[in-house]
Length: 230
Image 1: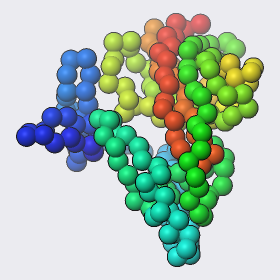
Image 2: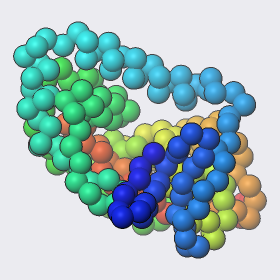
Image 3: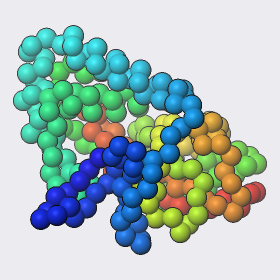
Image 4: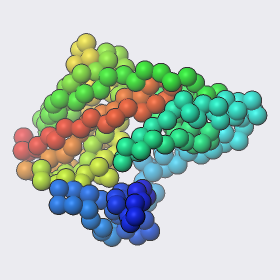
């Protein structure tokens, strides 16, 4: 849950108890949080497995290794949704950078790295077809880099508050000189396994984000792709 305080609360985003705060074209809203019938999905189990590995890894670090993470806190400042600069604690920085490295298939770093360049990621066009079953993402990327592919469930174009619905569905390597990623049926299969079939005459937000070698997550670039049932 993220809240920005003024003389009174001036903004909010995220979950609090059984409710979700969000903001769309019509203004801020509060709605009841729905609960999944089966919380033990393979995706959640995968996330828990990664965090378990990170928790065990942090406990096994030497004092000197932990000190590198404490010393690096100011090197990895970031902005929250309101644009405010925040600093992660050494432990949270360890978890954050290493989690993203695990997502793209890299190993866990015991000592804090130096900040590194985040690959370019600008999604300009997305198309997905039933026959052949493909998920096609075009844009500006760094050739040969691995990108995290994200998407939302089926929704209408008028939906504005979709950010809390974005989920990771897989990864893809930029090809074609960095002009496209995810051009295969694997990520479509992963999408349907997570969200179910795309509903006719709706659309999904599809996109990607980049991760630097040090584990820094880039900004998600999303594109609304309409599905007409073909």
